[in-house]
Length: 382
Image 1 (cartoon, rainbow, N blue to C red):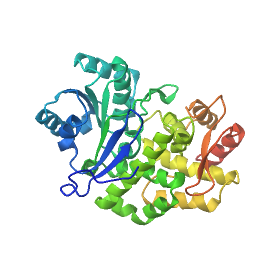
Image 2: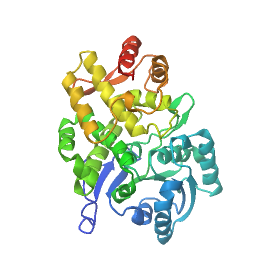
Image 3: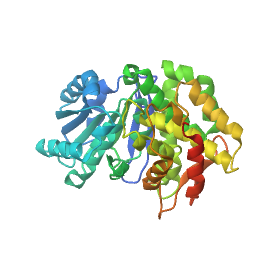
């Protein structure tokens, strides 16, 4: 699987293509500027259906829904749309029911498509609906945040949150196409872009130390846009695609993609998914620092690696400690309960992604809860 330029690359020199060759369900990830305005042509060249149900949120819809609808109409796709409230709390059973009802009312059939236009929340919610309506209809991801472009839009994980934790209801439902319009990232706030960058850095920390070193040197150019931004997105998508093809349903190596997420998800649950306090990428950033620090505490890695990771994430403006989360956190025991409820737990045993150093992550099964408890107590704000 090589990152390539699609046909017509002379006209779209900056565009990149990552192919995900899952047997019987292969799909393309297109990365570059202007893809929302070309969505209709890209979809009709790959899918037979001529109806679509677009799910978006009120913020994204105000920017891009009209352009997407115009593109679909130009290429003969009849589309309806639903705009939901923005934010993590939209990933709920109530909104899942609303989306499913809209898709059925629009008479979307199996060869038609549900289109997710938005960030990870919309992608996860719309993908879940696409996976269960009529036992599965076609699904197109048009991610508009950096986090969604490099992570949640690729790989087929869908889901919603419950009071028991994050993403505990869901299905694996691969998209049929991903259109990552890099120009859409220009409308993000600095906070949103930084949060997405945490997932980009994650791929370097898992098993690509050279990529992490490249990011340390080029992160400002990634933030500014241009070829470095597209390169970072393409490398990230390729990294995730490689893992997904090897382990689609997270029975082995795919768990490495959860670096920082077990700690991060517990912190998100501790804030009741209040985005004014903590967004997903910020939780992942803190979680990745904690994972490296915890690895050092267990004598698995050098403390210098943890300091290097923390220094880089702090330099780009991400939080790196629990003390930077506004408001009070619940007792340490409650944080451990959230970790124990996390879907990375197997057979009641705590499973973490730990590291032997930058780019040397591994799956650690049966981590002693007592070690986690004392570590979190040490790291929580005093």
